Length: 396
Image 1 (spheres, one colour):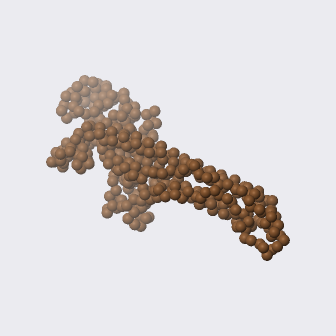
Image 2 (cartoon, helix red, strand yellow):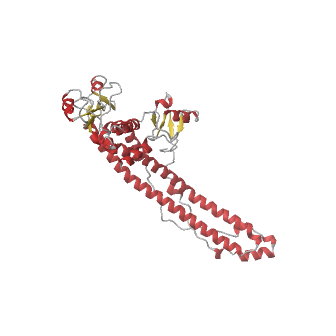
Image 3 (spheres, one colour):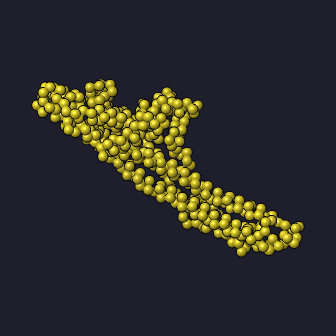
């Protein structure tokens, strides 16, 4: 099971979909899709302007002044890759070792910070030292359990990029930045909104969980509307196909001279089909794109919440909230109505045989083929249904 979890994490979150290799300096787009920095630079060069389409969802991305390198770094992916690499390294530490301190006793614990195997006796000394008293320890027999390692490492505060020996334990809401003790004291001096990560993440997690729950309700509504569009499209196509078959059957009773009239009528029916189906299919594409965008945001939010890494949650919070709010703004307000008048065909009203006989006896009274046959469609296309729907560029 552990191997499956770790394998899924590696497969779903640490490989670029452009080069299919592990991420190299992953950059995150506004749509929350991430790609390697070199891959995005090549992709953006092909656009020859200051914007390009996301390789995955086609949403337009506008480059900052300093180009692709100015796009935000994906803290979650980088942190996850480092954690998976550490899990891989630690899983090879499970062989029997002697204590790295006394060199005699068999190890019972492994210190994540000291990178040392420690026996029971030396653990007492290790825990008494001020600099190592707070170091996280893992039982040696758990080093081969990747699932256990993942749960432990995801709760460990990362080290500060500036002060390498200090762990990041604070969050400045004024700057929306994580900070270590030194950064909080120096770089964020005077800021009144610095909180401990453990306290800050509680409210942030609650907000993200509420957004996730709310988005699930929106997704249900969107999927229902998507299903309606598909059903209505199928109904129209089925009706038109039935009418076409009836037209073909009617035409088979008439001499070859009327074959051209049949082709014209069939073309008219196909035009009606296109007129009725085209706007619905446009809606289907829009709803489908909205669903894909929301699924991506949900997937990213759920993955971050499941990892339960406070620093990743805080780092990604604003981007995830912005994505939820943007999609909420453009959620579908209308739906395709199921109740509509059916397309019907009345062959008895066409007078095909009588008209053909008149044409056979008096060529001068010939009329155009469009007056010989009429497909009686009750009601007109429901254009008003679609006027309140958004265009696909509203959120893509």
